Length: 185
Image (cartoon, rainbow, N blue to C red; front, top):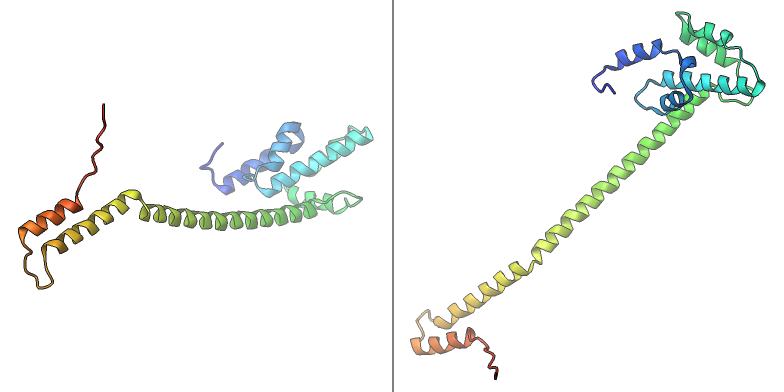
């Protein structure tokens, strides 16, 4: 929404957002948004995990989690809280590593797609050049030039002297003779 915002300002603004108060749609959007800092996405995913765990256990106690994120050293407490989590769920560090790995894979895929696009563009340019070379208009022009050179050869002998005008007239008439249809109506 704000393309001109600096990364430091974005990071500062994201620190003020309480991830526990985000709706389900806002959480899924924030977790998938590449423009948000990765710490924000990890926090959102963490609170979604806690929300799901509480919903499965039937618990409604969010006070314990909220005290970790309301203090000034929230990132340190966030990592302390996550180090204890390990029973079958992915910790934010592991999640961060998998997100980074997926990001690298996507960057590789984009690089491959760019290379493929460059190859296709080169093929397109070469095909255009071949089409221009084999254009019927250029073929007609070259055949016209050949006919002119033949006509020129008719008027000149090997010595460079002029041929008689009568013979040149007959040869030129034969060269440019039109085939007329004679229809009977």
